[in-house]
Amino acid sequence: QVRLVESGGGSVQSGGSLRLSCAAASEYTDSFYCMGWFRQAPGKEREAVATIDVHGRPTYADSLKGRFTISQDNAKNTVYLQLDSLKPEDTAMYYCAAKPGICWLPSLIGSDYNYWGQGTQVTVSS
Image (cartoon, rainbow, N blue to C red; front, top):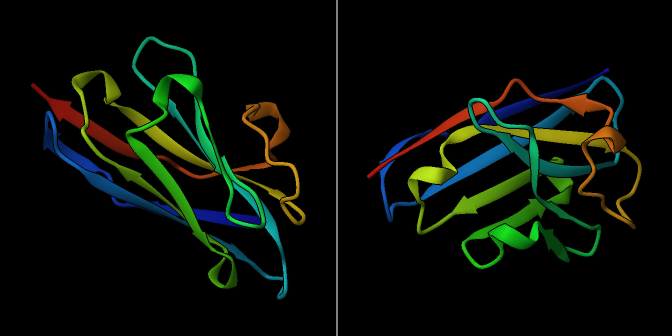
């Protein structure tokens, strides 16, 4: 079983920044995970935000390129999401997701992931 622990959400004004973190914890040592970020706003479907491959190459949802930056610390099985120039429409619950294995081909499809965090709320006021 894998547990994903997210942190870093909060409330900011439009134009502000936040940094989200997600750490994958497992009873098995030397585990590898492919991790990504998704978000879901009230009344809307979940949407992909970003993922990152084993070499650190990011993939972003087309609509979110330029303001968000995903990064990772493979040794810690931790992925980060830097949110800059936040807008009120970025208000959502942000979820970390993971699937076992080395991340050669990351995916922005939610159903490809086996494990999900509890979510961290990001609220942007105008």
